[in-house]
Length: 282
Image (cartoon, rainbow, N blue to C red; front, side, top):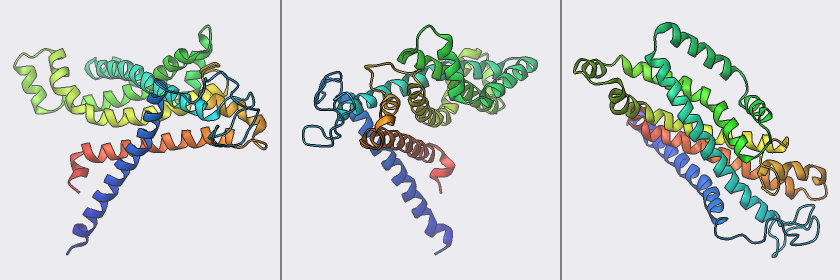
């Protein structure tokens, strides 16, 4: 038996394990976020116990410096993470895909100008762009953070869309479609988007994790979801003064952020291996 034959099942198994692990980690956060819509252990704003209590049967993760149940705060943090991730990716996808397709279809000089602009925007950190957008708004809140992150992520999506669309436009079936009299909107809907969507969907999964971490950073700096919204970043910010006396207040949101980021990356990697026919064949 050849080495290639022996390693192929191992690679396929590792890809399957990555996908399953990603689904498990992300699924836990989705479940916790959706559960908050129908049930919470305590009122998020209620002083449910003493200040900085340790874990117990009444408070699984203890309480924060105001006596609020930390497990309840963490559950709400999962919901906020889902809202931010989905909202930012949706905004980034709409803006980015639109700009990317326009760049692929426009004249060369306009395409070069858009490409240069996108490269400049991508050179700036996503968090910095989001901070500038939030600072330019009247008040810092959850929705301004989502819009800011969506705008910041749109440059990455636009650049990828432009590259993928240009590859598809040189294909023979695109030439045949144009020769047959198909309109550009029809070509985009029938031929271009279906061919670039698999790769874009993997990128969207990665952008989701980036958006969640960026929102936590904004909340830590006071530019994200304001109280009583229990963002993981705000929980971390509030716990920094009591990290030695009540370390779980900082450890819990840190683990939540890391587990969601790892889960999304594993899920994206598994999706790429499932969608990409060259990887599927290995």
